[in-house]
Length: 195
Image (cartoon, rainbow, N blue to C red; front, side, top):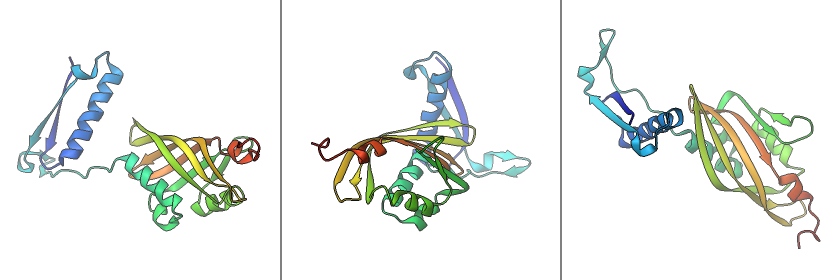
């Protein structure tokens, strides 16, 4: 029955404390043979006046926004083609890789994505089924799965194309997006095969 005790300066919101407790629990359960209900996480909160480092009193640091919230907001902005707002979520070294010949098509600007998509479909929307996060150092990896629906260039609708998006988020900025999907198969289907 592992017990994790963590000292925090008083002042973090309940949402941040709950998120931290869940992640600490998951880290223990993924490392030790311990069921979730056997892992105890306890926070000892101290007032800022009782917490000093280097002879300097400290205050609570800023909590990061959940990486999955950043990714989901980015995806909605991209669907709406609000590129200016979407760009604010991107790391300066941002790169996205889409399915394509050889090892895929790598893009670094959102305008390149719009150009890349233009000869393929009129618009696409995502129906999100799962969102999962994993952590390594300062990078959070977010996996988003679901299906794509939208409109072909000829105006006919399509739906049900499976997708997986993998995002790397660091310091609240998306630095990489890898995309895998069945969209090319769905778009290539003939009217007869569509039923």
